[in-house]
Image (cartoon, rainbow, N blue to C red; front, side, top):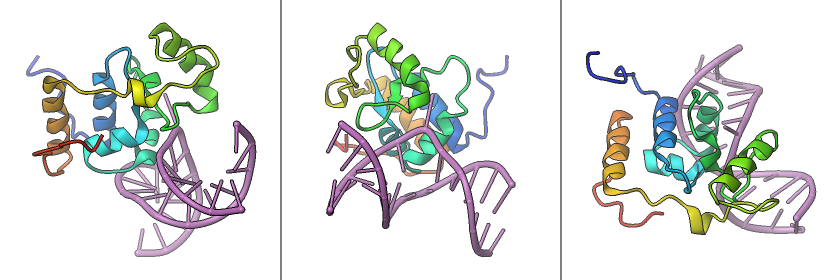
Length: 129
DNA sequence: CTTTTGACAGCGT
DNA sequence: CACGCTGCCAAAA
C-alpha cells in the first residue's frame, strides 16, 4: 500500500479524470473550465480525455459551455442533473448558477495537478472563472 | 516527420 | 434556435 493511488505519470487525461472526480454533486464545470483549471490543453482535449474516464467518474458534471451534453449521453446525463437538482427536465444546466467554485482544499489539489503537468502554478488565480 | 481526429468553444449568418 | 466555419491542442495513426 505504498502511498495510495499509485503515482501515475499523470498524462493530460489522467489530470482531467482526477479533476472531474473532485467536482461535488450539485456542481458542474465546462470542458473549457477543466482545461483552464489544468493550465493547458483545450476543451477538445478535456472532452477526449473524458471519453476514457474510468468507472466512478461523475462525467455528467463536465458539460458543454452552453449547459448541454453530447447527444449520445444527454439522456443519461439529464437524469443525473435532475437527481442533483442541476436542471429541470428538458432543460440545460445553468452554468452561471451551478459552475463549481472550488474550496481552498480543492484549489490545492488542482494546483498539484497543474504542477504535475509541468504547468506554472496558479499563484494568484484571481478570477479567470 | 505530417495528417487526422475529437464527450468542444465562439462567432457569424 | 439551427447551421456553418474557424480556432484550439494533445494523442493516435
